[in-house]
Image (cartoon, rainbow, N blue to C red; front, top):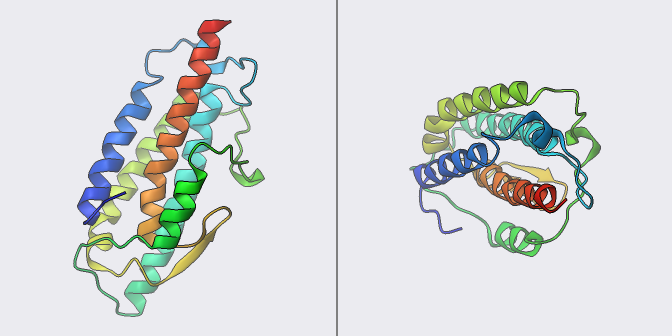
Length: 180
């Protein structure tokens, strides 16, 4: 987590998104919807969950940056990640975290719709980049259920980390499918 600029975070998140999408791009419908033993969600449900969370994260970032803009707070394009966030995120690595009810998949969404939503959200994130680079994204905070109060920049960073977490989960699901 050694990002110096907003551009660094955006570049990392873009690379993560490509790896995430490649992980399931060539899977059959059967593989996408399989529920192997030991895994609560199918690959399609994981993708649906990530799309739901990314939508919420985008709304939070937009709100926090809007507050910074309204308060006349500016940014020079740099990123500041608090030690508290780093510690909370580090302690969550490898832990199973229970998704709040509001972001759990309902499994009635076709994966194509989840992918379309992810692409649409990525477009909105790209449009928000200039605001991240010019408006303070540090001072205003919004609470995360596991990581506490987080700034817009931390939410942006977490969106990529969240996809990494679920990319690993997709790989576990696929390993379990292959083993069965």
